[in-house]
Every structure is written in C-alpha cells, then in structure tokens.
Image (cartoon, rainbow, N blue to C red; front, side, top):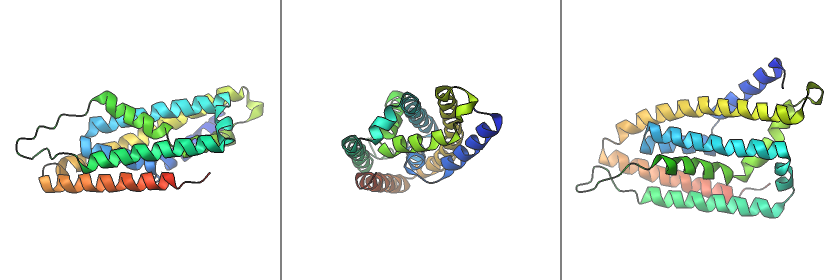
Length: 208
C-alpha cells in the first residue's frame, strides 16, 4: 500500500486534475445541464467504471502493450471520435421538451451510464495517462506494486466522484433554469452538439 504521505499527495493532484478542463468533465457538465442531475451522476458512474478498467489494465500490464501498439491507438481514437460525433448529431436533433405535442422521455439510467463507460474507454489518451501517471507514485520498496496501483486507482476514482459529482450538481442546476425556456433549451442543445463535434475532431487528430 502507498504511504500516507504518498496517498495524500496523489489524492490532492487527482482532485486538481478533476477540475482541470478536459473532455470528461466537459462531457459530465453538458450531460448534467441537458438531462438533469441524476443523468449527470449516471454518466459520472460510467466514467468511473471505465477508470476501473484502466486501473486493471495498468496493474496487469495490458496498458503497456496497448501503448506499444500504434494500430490499437488509431482504432480506439477513431472509435471514440465516431461515438462523440454520434452524440453531437443526437444533441443537434434533440426535440424541444416545451414544443407543442412533444413528449420527451427521460433517458434510461443504464444508457446514461453506458455513455460514460464508452466515453472513457474509447479515449486512448486516458489509457496512456494512467500508464504514465500512476507508476510515478509507486514505491517498489513499499510492498506489492500491483497492490499500490490498485490503491492509487481507487483514490483517483474517489477524487473523480467528488470533483465530477460537484460539477454535475452545479451544471444540472444551471441547466434546469435553461430548460424552462424553449429558446434557451435549443441554444443548450446547439452548444452541446458543437462541443461534442469539437471533441470528436480533437480526438480524431490526437497523436500519441
């Protein structure tokens, strides 16, 4: 297990990373503003599920194999970009809840959770980040390396829950106000579509 000093330092850095603007927290804020607080939390849980997979991959050495494969990086980044482009198209075509005769059903929690999972797992940058970030806080003299990696991954997930959960809470409150107006809701959908499209382009052009 990491020492208390190492764990606290790692947790502090993880909290700072959680509030630093990036694709995942922007994704959480947009989903929360568009679909509500519960939806935002389901997306956060989905992202954290993806982080569990990344932690396991680093611990088992699979992330190193991925990092060595240029083809795997390209396939994964284009899959992620395609998924973001699909979400952009959905947001652009989203019906107005206030439109006459329109009934907009809430998105199922499982679907929102899956959005978070797919968003996280199809971003090859997350794999490379975990591979580079977690080992920096591992001390080979402090016991099992695998155990330390698992503990650090758990701390990172806890920090993500705290930071992303807070972002979701405030974004949902703002989105609730905007959704009272059909014009504001349309504006929110357009902004969401634009941001998703921009994230898709950014991911498609990403280099290792």
